[in-house]
Image 1: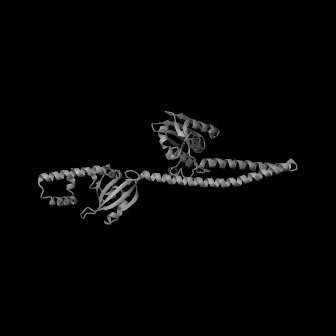
Image 2: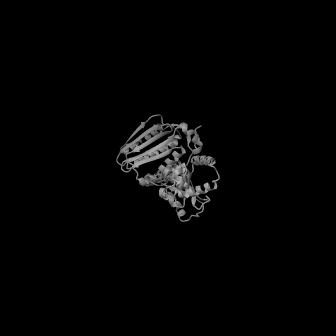
Image 3: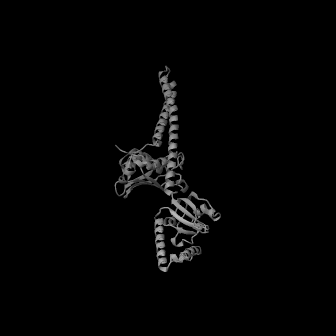
Length: 402
């Protein structure tokens, strides 16, 4: 049926007639052998093209797809039975806009560009277009399409990582510069305290001044602690990995947050699903990770609520899911939740979820967020199982525990 359809096409029948005209001296037996050989060669070429991962299309000047290999048809959502009649411009508008000039200029030069497609699914492809010289008057173009979605995502992740590292470096530098004058102020306040203690004046005359000095020293000490914690939180450090039970980390964090949970009238439940949630992780960084996630959950609830923490294990991953009944996150905000200094909370610094993402990446894991405004948020932390994680240590720059 396919051969009949092709032979009935006007543009192809003329080419076949010319070939047959040159072979009119062959008898029917030799001609049949030649036809069979050509059919085998065509089948071989189609098999080879279908095995190629890149998409290969042949289109004419009107955009009609004359040929598509298996990968090409899949990338643009083309039904194989429509080859020869489907018009690329109508089939994939996103791709058509990139090729629009072909309909106006049959002598278009070879081009290469990256195109974002939204059909049949969202992906990025690299497009190469060349004019085909087929020996007849018809204008045709070869289109090679390569799926670069993963490459693009990896590049974006690398750029984002470099951006975050730049912010970390800047923040560490600013924190260091703030720390120097604080130390100087502390030294001079301590000198003032000593001199006040040596003054030969009644206690009641210096009591108020001494109290002010002590308050200043206490506040400087508090600022110094904040800076140390801040630097410890943002300074990129390679995790020292060891087998760690996530539930033990969860209980340690909740013990620290117990007073705040009670103050906010928040009920917290912890449930272990099937299998032990053992991961290769840095216990200190994992505590910071879970602290940030649970802290966000608490701050999302103003008048009480609930936090449910559940662990689970499958053949490849260990999951820790933290669900709250808070205010939820708007759809537009979810896409920006990991951006440095982006926050939806009054007084928030916008570094918490960025740090969560960094720690998860360094542990070879992923973060997922599902949220409904007014109903709550579910944060899913997905870690590779230890037997799947070991080969990835060098990839993420982590170090095994000694």
